Image 1 (cartoon, rainbow, N blue to C red):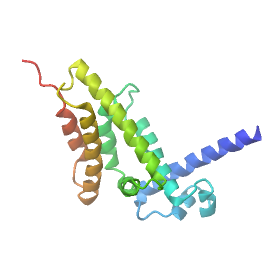
Image 2 (image 1 turned 45 degrees about the horizontal axis):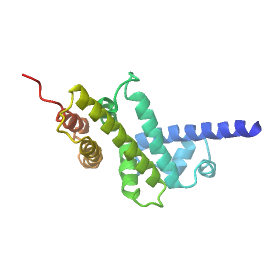
Image 3 (image 1 turned 90 degrees about the vertical axis):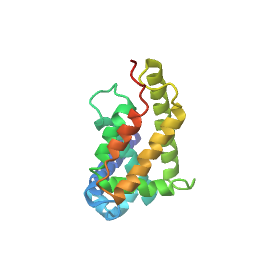
Image 4 (image 1 turned 135 degrees about the vertical axis):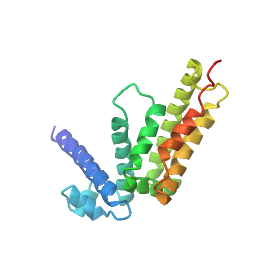
Length: 195
C-alpha cells in the first residue's frame, strides 16, 4: 500500500511541477526560462525537479502535454463542444502566452527525430487532432453544415498545418490574428446556403 501512496504523491508532484512551469514559461518566455527557475517555482532543487523527469527535453515535452490538457478544459464550458468550434478559442488563448508558443514551435522543429522525447507526443497529438477533425467534418457534411466536395483528410491536415505556420508567423509578427485565420479556414468549408 505504501507504494501506491508514494506513486500518487509522485504523480501529484509532477502535476505541480508542470503547472508551475506553465506559469513561469507563460510569464518569462521559453528562451528566458531555466530549469532552475521552474524548480524554484515548484519549491524544489534542480536535482529534485529532474528526479521526476528523465531529461530537460522530457520536462519540456510534458509541459506541452499539460498545456494541451489545460487548454482542453478551459476552451469551452460546454462539454459537448466540438474541437472545430473550440480550436479558434485555443488559438486565441495562445496569443496571450507567447512563451508557450515559443516552446511549442521549438520542440515541433526537433520532434521529427524519432529519438527526441517530443517525437511520440507530436505524432500522437497530430494523429488525435486529425482523427477528431476528420470525424467532425464528416459529421458536418452529413448534416449539411460543410460542403460535401470538401476532402475531410486534406481539410484536417491543412487546418493543423495552418495553425502551426501561424504560430511561427505570429512569433515574428505579434499583431497577426491567428484565430481569425483559423476561423476563416473553417468558414470556407461551409456549404453554400440554399436559395
